[in-house]
Image (cartoon, rainbow, N blue to C red; front, top):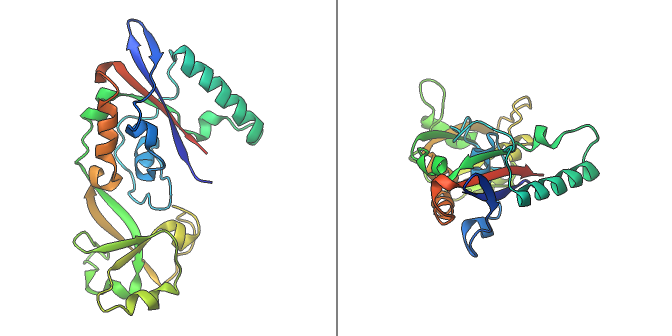
Length: 229
């Protein structure tokens, strides 16, 4: 279970696009599930700790390129056939999988050091004087530990520690589903935020950028991607 992002890498040769296999051990051969990077690329929250709202996009969602390489078009046809066999009738993959593409030079030119706000939930008992005049709670200068799973019962155990760090819960933990604002918020948590940069928030930005640089001349490399869920 969970969301993956599939990348198709192509290089422009003359007027055509050709399929490119990523170098062994490069980011695109080993990336796993960096959900925060996925959130940035897809333009929507992905995973249990994708808490930075309204991440500034590298580019709007563009759909599939009209000039895919022969290999990429074959892969797309196989993927669409698999979707029709396994998903709900009448649901188009394009409507839920956010297909898009970026040129490598767009990725490298993006401002990875612009500020974002990461939102999460902390134990209300810990908030205290950190609440500002506007009611918001900023923890940018506080040591924080994130937990993917946990419930109210963890509060007593964590707060019993004399030097207990701030413990940040995701919406997945607090509400039972990520980023579902209509659910009631229990009183044992308070929403908080931390200031960071896109680079810090994503966590694997350097590995991703190094992987993009390793693919070839940035003006000739295209990354097409979609959510595989």
